[in-house]
Picture 1 (tube, protein in one colour):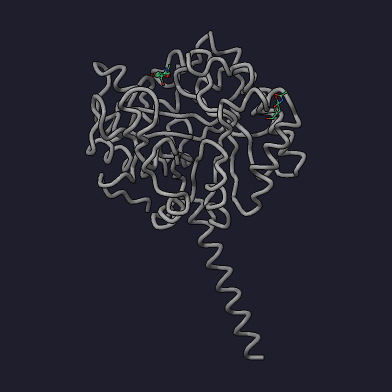
Picture 2: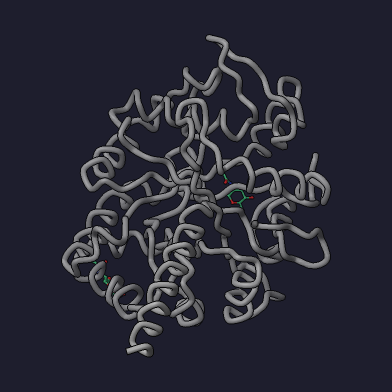
Amino acid sequence: MATTINQLVSVVVLLGLLIALKQEFTVAQIGVCYGRMGNNLPSPTEVVALCNQNNIQRMRIYDPHQPTLRALSCSNIELILGVPNTDLQSLASSQDNASTWVQNNVINYPTVRFRYISVGNEVSPLNSNTSQYVGFVLPALRNIYNAISAAGLDTLIKVSTAIETGVLGNSFPPEDGVFRDDVREYLNGIITFLVNIRAPLLVNIYPYFAYIGNKPNIDLQYALLASDGIVVRGGIRYQNLFYAILDAMYAALEKSSGSSLEIVVSESGWPSAGGDAASVDNARTYNTNLIQRVRGGTPKRPGRAIETYIFAMFDENQRDGNEIERHFGIFTQPKYPISFN
Ligand SMILES: *[C@@H]1O[C@H](CO)[C@@H](O)[C@H](O)[C@H]1NC(C)=O
Ligand SMILES: *[C@@H]1O[C@H](CO)[C@@H](O)[C@H](O)[C@H]1NC(C)=O
C-alpha cells in the first residue's frame, strides 16, 4: 500500500515537473538557424549537443539533411525544416514527388519534432537569385500541405514559406507598412493559402541591412535594440528597429487580407565582421538584446512573445555573396558568450 502511494506520489511529481518543463519550452521563443555552408563546422550530433548545453529548444535547417534529422531524433528540439528552392519545381509539378518528399524527410522521422516546413526561402520577384522560383512556391506549398494533411499531421506541422522584407514598399511609420505593387500578386496567393490552412508566415528580419541601407536616418543603437527607441505618429513608442520592421510587415499583411496571420521571425542576426557596423561587440549586443526583446510583443501585438530564430549558429565560410554573409555565426569560436536563459 505504502509503495503504491509512494509510486503515485512519484508519478504526480514527475508529471508536475514535465508540465513545468513544457511551460519553460513554450516560454522560450528563441531558436537558432543551423546553416551548413561551411567546411569547418561541427557534426550534426555535436550541434544538437551544443543546443542542449545552451538550452536551445528550437532550430531551423535549410534542407532535409539526413544526418541532421537523425541527430535531431528524440532530441526534443522543435524544428523548421526547409524545402530548398531548387526542389520547388519538382514538388510543384507533381503531387507524387511532394508526397515522396514528405515520406522520406518527415514521416520517416517520427521522433523529430517538426514544427514548420518552410517551402522555399526568400523567393521573390525582386531577387534576381530567386525570381525563377516564384511560380513554384504556391503549388509546392499546396502539394506539401496535401501530403502532410494526408498523413494526418496538419494540426501538428504547419506548412509555410519564408520571405524577406524587401517586399515592403513603405515601412515607416510601421502603421504605413505596405507591400510593393510588383510583389502583391505573388504574395496574395500565398497569404490567402496560409490564412486558409491557419499557418503562420515566416519572415526573415534584419535590422542590420535596414540600418546599412539608411544610415543617415537610423540610429545604430536603435538598430541594435539598445536605445530607448523613438516615438512615431500617434505617440507610439518603438523601442527598437526589429519591432518597427515586424509591425510594418503586420500592417502590410492587414492591407492584403492577411490580418489573421501570425508572423514567425525565421531569421534575424547581426554580423561580427566583413562590413560596415559589423563587429563582435555589435553582434553580441544585438543578439543578446534580441533574446530578451522577443519575450515581449510589439506595439501592434502587445504582450505576445515573438517566435524568432537567430541567424546563425556558425560562420559559414562557403556561403555565396558579400563577405558579410559569412560572419553571422554566434557559436564560431572565439567570439562572445551568449545566454539563452
Ligand atoms: C519527380 O521527381 C523525379 C525524381 O527526382 C524527377 O525525375 C521528375 O522530373 C519529377 N517530376 C516532376 C513532374 O517534376
Ligand atoms: C545573388 O547571388 C550573388 C552570388 O551569390 C550575390 O552576390 C548577390 O548579392 C545575390 N543577389 C541578391 C539580389 O540576393
